[in-house]
Length: 297
Length: 320
Image (tube, rainbow over all chains, first blue to last red; front, side, top):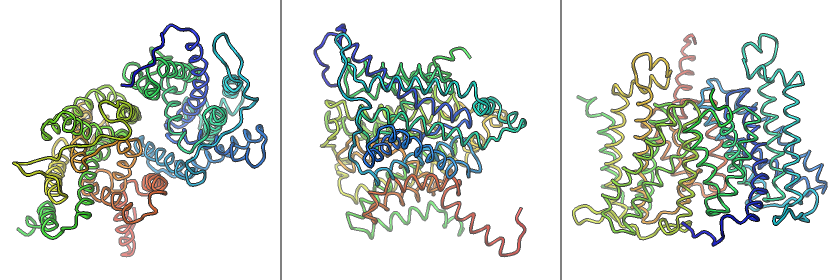
């Protein structure tokens, strides 16, 4: 074990700082978790390639920004490109599967993720790229802690996207059709909803959410070809913690995970930061596999 | 009589002895040793995937636990290597039990996720627990195995340990698969409900096969540590777990001999194609997707099926 820093646990300033960075990361996990949930609902597939969409979002946006330095354009361009990739992935890798049992689907999506990561390594190389913050780097002081404008962008935009998704699923015809499919695919087909289209749409939406997460976090962490795997897995942890498919659960799971991990790395040891997430995952899987939020069912 | 002589296991033993008698090149022997170690890992994982219908995405962790137990106990504490190997087996067996009991009660994706999370935690511990594992730069000074005053420290001697051992384990696995337990396992793969209705204790069976595969991995890890004399965390990460799945999928699920083929191909490829390394990840991803989509019974079995199918059509047979 590495020796922990000689600081007192009850100091408030670092705690607040951990909370800020934890909530920021947690928001990102929540976005990714929502993507997992949408695909799981439509198909009962866990898409192990979801994390790579996050990486692709960040790197595509960075490349677009290098060609034409406009952040809104980079954001939109990144999201649109990755959405298309998500659709192509579903069409080429998942739709042709004749016998879709979980084992086959796990292997295919793991393979897809690895494949996308390898292609990204060829295109972008192994170095990390930066994307400028959305509105400068002048920090705010919040008591004894500092808050970057990008932290606010991440949390604010995530909240906005989650709200938009909620409205989409509750108020629009297409959103309701997707929910119907998730609830009972056969019944949905009987009233004329094309299951194939809904599956495609779910992959498109999940890819878009992942890409958005990647672009939001890129100014804080840099974009690199192998960033996706870990972010994807943590998004999955968040989704499982919240009970797969419940969007409120995914958000809470993401925030809890982000804060726990930030406190863990600050108070115990930064080397074990990633272990915190997976320890929580194992704990939840073993003690409450239906998720923290859904509780009893 | 001829059938008995042509028994594949007899042929295997003859081939192993013939290679031992004729091959003296250390490079090729070492390559064979790694193929043997990988085959051992893949046979174990294949029992779980091909017969149990479950997947472990953290098998590199059991391999690593075996390797590090052997490494730490012999290099740091001077324990007898054979005892260290047994300690590794015990550790992996108990760990697999603790992970398997809760995870296997749940279906589908849960064992995949639990093993994935477990694999990452173990990898992080290998990297971070400096005083125990030597951290990212690894652990050196692992003692070789010894038998009756003979140090097993040359590629030839290691070969003479690894391959006969592998032969015995493969034969035992084939035997297991053909036994009552093996039939129950296949029933489990086809339909858990049907197996249950026929009185198969599916939970216990899945747990047993998971522990079994972890033990194979631990043994392979110990052999790996003594073959190389050095272990570092990079050999036991998520990518290695994926690589093992690639070997299983390539050789064909539910095929003991296929495991050998998958391990051999994936171990030898990087040696003959120097450019392989840059594209390794892409190739692995492509293999996983392509085989599962087009030839879900594995490359070899799938190609054989295709060939038989075409021959059948040429003869003018009706295709059902």
